[in-house]
Image (cartoon, rainbow, N blue to C red; front, side, top):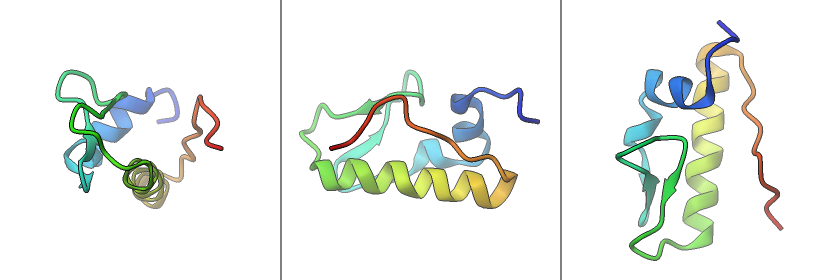
Amino acid sequence: NTKKKAWELIAQYGCDKLSFGKAKFSQHHCNFIDNTNLALSSDIEKLINETKKIIYKNSGIKLELEIKII
């Protein structure tokens, strides 16, 4: 169902439980990444990329970032 929101897909496929280093999704809303523990940017990128990969593999939906990583 392509009508699902990104956070619904993140939760549906268990990505909300993923973490890399200190990077993890917020407990309050998995559409946000929690960086209160000073995660490395590389860990945040790994979390994003793994999440995108899992969702695409399981649903065929390609998530796109609303931000640009430079």
